[in-house]
Image (cartoon, rainbow, N blue to C red; front, side):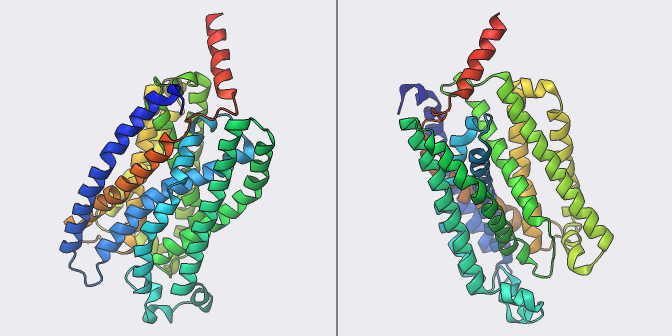
Length: 405
């Protein structure tokens, strides 16, 4: 590893040092929440665990989308956060291990209602063909296998090109990423149907998979931008930060914030205008108790505030402000996933119970602590800026030359 990268790597080392203690604290909180859960099926515990898993899976799968997108369009802006995205995607084998308890719970009917025979026999015949523990498990294995193999292949080609500067590797990545990205979108849609939407097998939404894909990609860009801008004074990031790059990253976050707003409003209007029981149950569950206020706050915090900040040129020219916005988007995304997932299994009409909070926070910390430890280790092993494509450095040099002229 080059001496140039040592300063940024030292920051990642410090992040890795606090990850396992955070996981330990999270495991304790999750355990307390489990003991306080009086439901015979432990619905609060399993909803919390699924939520904690989905937070970090969302970041990893958003990074997977970013990798496929980068190697398809060969954009300049994504070079700056490509290695961060690759380190995130390399956690998919770990997430596959964290998924195993959900497989056990699915087979025992503790998470997904369709695993219960009484519910299963009331489903449409087409849904009965799709939802079965065996089929669900096989499909889940296929999803993980494709994402792990696909991202590893693209990452290896990228790292090899760093060593030999052979442009043929870029063509190979594009030839795989373009059609592979289409298959990735299809599999992600199926996965969100299997893992989240089927928490209520009666509910229907044709936008839910696309919504998760867009918001996960925004999550990944925001986290990558936050890391980049947090380490902007340290090499190698100090050699690439310039106004055009921060403008590009800000515009991407603005664009996907607008996509989030469009998909969210579209889904709400379609369900509201149709007013069908199998569709409006999603919002009925989330208009109970404090969830209605949380939903309203998410509209403001996940769309209105980022939109108003990101349309400002000053925000995109000022790294410290853009860093704040990127962190804000990432944190609100974590809260939004709680609103998306937990009400499927927990009734909030009587308020938010203590075990729900303990379980949710504990699951995010427990899974996230180990995830961050592995992610930091992955990121420390490679040069944080791809050296095979010098466009970022050249753009910085051109900007400096023009500013001095």
